[in-house]
Image (cartoon, rainbow, N blue to C red):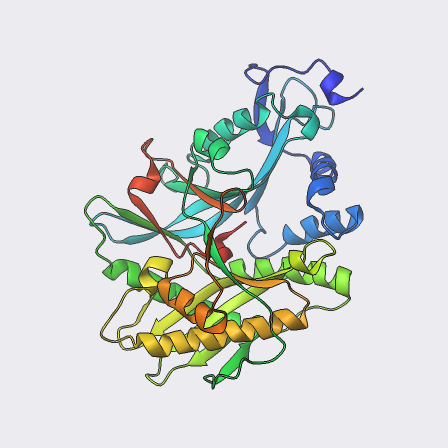
Length: 399
């Protein structure tokens, strides 16, 4: 019997509740959502990818939880799959008003799915309501409340906002792949590999903490950031490698690029490749994280807003040239992997300037439907976009 023909409880039924999936239910759910999300992978390959991603440094030891909205009066493995999602533990930084920078536990919500046959019945909204309550105190010490959680909406800005996750600015700039440099005299740009992740991510994390510590946001404004650590970057690369091996028979080695400026500071980025459907246009080389180091002050410029700021110790023009060299390295890499574009999320004015030097037609695109960065502040019901600045809101934080 089809689910729509079954005698399912309404979304406001007291029989319904959110629980963790059994292994068998997890496989059933992957087979369901794989019809929409497997891309170029077979069903079995897609199941293997999800299992693989659940066994990374970022996701091991209970860091990822698989949730199910169901009829709790039914037995496990026999109960209906009404809606499902996952929550992923994340290390984050929070600075509230005049307080110091604090590292706490947060969660990213991902893989929100409802069988197309059951959509429009309120099950997903019920699940999100209960999930918010489940995450209020999950993983916290001393009975403290979770401060915020995030998700990335692929269904526009309205549904999740109604359920407590407010949309933030979600923009990007795209560049075409190129097979040859554009004739400029670039700064020396060296490739980055997996072996570079630990040192550079560690440096990035310490600079981000220091930058937030020294920041003086307006009165009443708080700052938050997802920590761009090695485990997070490696999770993206594990996803990339798994798909590349199965659709192309090879895996990437180059993970980014780095330029050392004349003032001794470094500019670097890490990237990952997304393999869409068969068309080249669906393949994207995403800049996960772009960092400008200012060694004289031991501060980085960690977000779209901050990178665009000026500082006596920062030579903006040289940093534009460095970013130009890095973006061109990404374009060259994209061409080698048959990518349709290079994409950078929430670029700063300096990054846009560098992009336009490479392609005068490049412009900022504001997404309205897909990958909408959204945040819920669990300590307050007011709109977080009014008073919380999301620092370093770049692709690496996506889940």
